[in-house]
Image (spheres, rainbow, N blue to C red):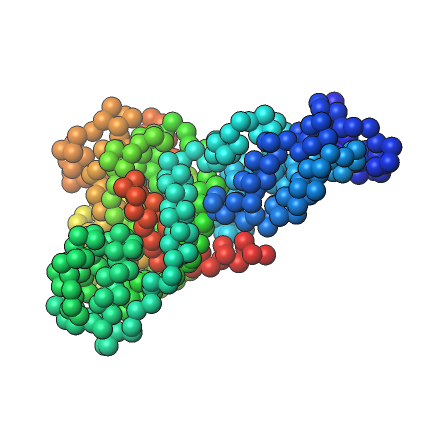
Length: 514
């Protein structure tokens, strides 16, 4: 059965309704006009379309200005039913597009190179349109249509904050650095301007600013600068170097745009479920493990991670998969590309070093396949593709003592690492694409909560025991999301910004302006 509203619209588009002879629109067939006038709900909806930027969207995409002008023209009582019905139709079409963008984003994640297999078939907009037409609080009804992620709502608050900052007189202009960097205690010609900016951004309390004067980077100013650096993914050393200076002079409008891009990506995610799930934000180099969508930050398991290098072939991909099993004391089965480019040249150069680091040649694909001698003849067979190379379990193993397996097309997984010193770096793009976790014991505790729970002692024992790799299958899979957002809103009101290490923001920007 064709709904009356769409039947009327079809008749109108076919030219069956003429302005001179058309009847008054039936109250059951239209949503936004009553008794020959535009409804209060329609005006509230138009106001929301006109302020679409508050939700990270663009009013121009929904003909907000022209629809408002038409509504104003229709405010005078008239008998032109065709104009009223045309307005009703066009407002419904624009609003349906707006709702779709709020719920699923303006572009497809696949177009941005993301393997987020989220159902994106067009939903019937009529229930949402009717709910809005009947709503006494249109803004709140629209809020309910947006992604139900706590940090999405925080991003929207952050967007309002940074839009307001962008309206202030420019406060991000600082003198260039006199040399490579200005260290704590040294003088900087822009010290007063730096204080004003840090006060405006909330990194320097006004009470501290009152006691921080002069051209030197004194203790109070250094502490504030360190807080700014921490919020922007920089090493919090209090040194005013080139990276920190560039972050300081970035316009607030650009920061607001980062928030908009992050909101767009959140819309690509499936609705939050009961959990648990694991979330890795690649440019933040952080992992967050949730028991449920309502978990606050303090209830999460959080840790630093190392992700893929900035060279495109080694980028950590953006995708979703299910963590299904854990392997203690894993072998590292060296991928073919790494074997050819890195491991084989190493072994050719120094077989003794390769043996010391635990590399061995294997004939066959299983863990129990026979090991063959690590010699020149074996390396020749490896190069011909007759053998494979793996690294034995142990302290030198590139995967550390545990890996968390989420079968996927990229062969990407989570694992521990012996290179703990790299977690001290601010930018942690060092892997071939897999994600190295800083605290594998804490992650294993989270993962095994649904399997009766494992103590840290039991996990450590399983990691360091003698013997071949040990696989533990999970009773229920855990959803893992590899995500990419250069802006994150924290529960304490801070907005964190990170470098666009893979240039994904640039790519999304181009898609959005097409």
